[in-house]
Length: 385
Image (cartoon, rainbow, N blue to C red):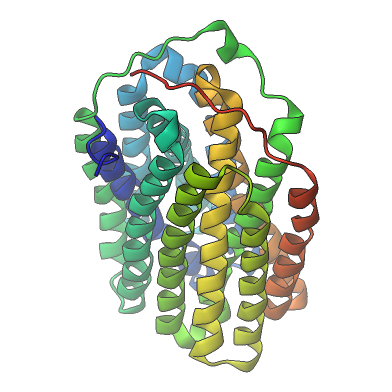
């Protein structure tokens, strides 16, 4: 209960729930709609890729915007840009339209992701940081767990317009939560302009890039790979989101209790095993391997998320929270976009089983790096709002 009584934390969680719920409604639907309109798998993957490219470019400048504008304006603008452009899909999902709208929505998502992550570190003391990032992950994952199957379910029943309307409306709900946030003084001390050294960025960012790449492939290509089992694909994506929730909060609790860095390698192993099981599900069929693979991958992915984020925040200290948040979110979103595009090409050339086999191997290759390079022992000072 201490965490929920922290000033502004419940509001931040509500904002994350709505913003990421709106994003997740359209995440698998738009590539699927573009694919069904006649585009190739590579183009379907490119829809997610250009979204994430715009996100990453925006994330590069968001720390400076936070210092200049503050959290409320940045978050509000991000929610508006993430939601309103989805209304264009009511008129067309042609390739140029889908790509253009994805760029605008990606800008909004870039603002929301960096500001939302750094906000949590601004609101809570250092001893609650792991659980706070985990709790924010719960809010985000619940939104995704609900939105992913709802979006696919409505689309599969022929209600595409309803999906696009919800995708526009839900992020706007987050604007109300933004208005209720406490005012946070966000000064720009000299240390905020210093870059984090590569030695601190290497392991958390590499782990996020690789596992998020697989997540991009799962959310974009799994519904297409099991198109004859659309309901099962929706359930699998919901299981991924639910498992992310468990993995992320569990890793946060462990980070606060036993220290950062202990869970990263096991989490990567778990995610790799999940991707391997998804290969089995595609080859032999059956709901069991599909759901088990989704559960393992989601749990590992959630734990990697929290471990890498807390590791960056602890290394950065209070002067560079925006930069640490940007590094983590860029790794996450660049990985998601690159994975959707690259694995789409793999699907076109080698088939869907190869997509998830390559994914499992790529994650496994990061495990030795995580074991060899230790986490920093530095703990960030408490940041007073």
